[in-house]
Image 1 (cartoon, rainbow, N blue to C red):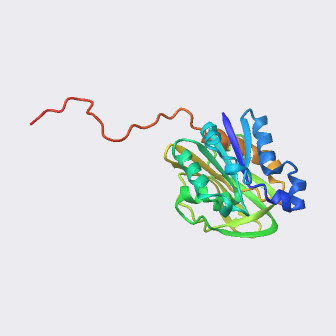
Image 2: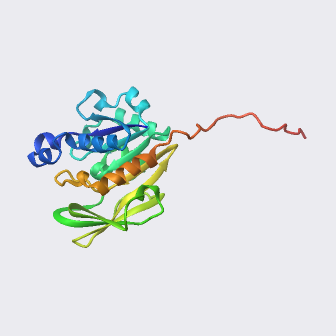
Image 3: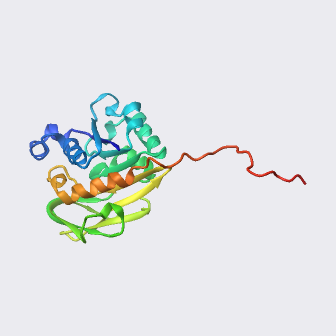
Length: 239
């Protein structure tokens, strides 16, 4: 399986705390544990030509993992539309944390994707809402994070096809933190944790969920549907 990890790579260049937590960038950290899991992994970042997402890269990617926050509007419409089309054509998409506001995710959801948020170093408990789902394989009843950014309802997304995780925060809010969607031939997994100033992507349970999510989103065997004007399979009796 070929996986591309995309990241703005902006916080790492401007925030010393982020660069200390992720010296190889958030994309580098994500790619490292995906590679250890056996995936053929490459990275792409915002400031590369075509944001690193050339036709060749997208066509070769079984799954695209997307992290963004401060520069959503710098992603060109052309690239966002190309990614959307690749998802519709069957590429898997794993959308992490603040990428809920990315052009790609909003285009695929068809909604504003807004929510409540707060940075207060509060505890998050991610409850497994569907213990039978392959994305939760190897995870217990919940994952507890000592400190994370709060995301709260109402989350302006369509009703998910499957709700996998629900978060509770120390301040009292709850959030649909793990949700799946199908768009065209592609599968999408949104997973909430991962604010840049916390070492969330070093957490082994969070890594396991993302590894499982990439495996689930891969869709290499679905046949391409036949559409358009079609000849009858049986002889039509003329009346």
